[in-house]
Image (cartoon, rainbow over all chains, first blue to last red; front, side):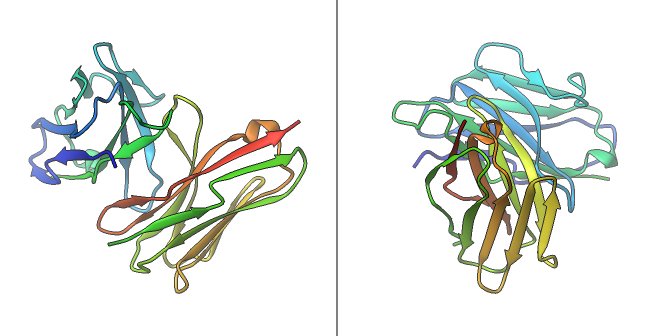
Length: 118
Length: 109
């Protein structure tokens, strides 16, 4: 099956710094990538949808200037948490869809990135 | 490695029927289990979250149960409507997310 990787899997940073998380589709071209966030004991929540070569569509309540998403190629999307604060500490997950042979709408999920902001 | 299976893979029911979707997982060491809905071309929408210490959660016409010891969860949808047509996914959180294979639901008017 299709494989999606995320890097890093775990990151600790100081408040005020920026953190970049990469999401890669390893064996297929992802026309669409989704970014999710999960706070402790809460549901996985969709943050934004990005299509290759165009601006991301953010869900209501998600600050686009704080969570910068770039989907510059069909195999890579990045999420940058700018000026991170402790309340941004969360589990971030990406998923990718598309590629030859994939079931329409089928999403393949990365393993997630745990961000801790001190 | 955790394996999550959903049965049936596809389901078609007439409007108004009550229905049950099943999810099973092989490793009971989980933090929580979630049920999601996926509409065509959209990201996942969270429906219900059950913590590992809980046995069920309810939201409107939806009720989800969790039997961690047997590795099973069910999603009960009461009085189904055409708008419920979507793919339903369950996912368990261990050291990472493990998603089920999904059930494609069609509610016929």
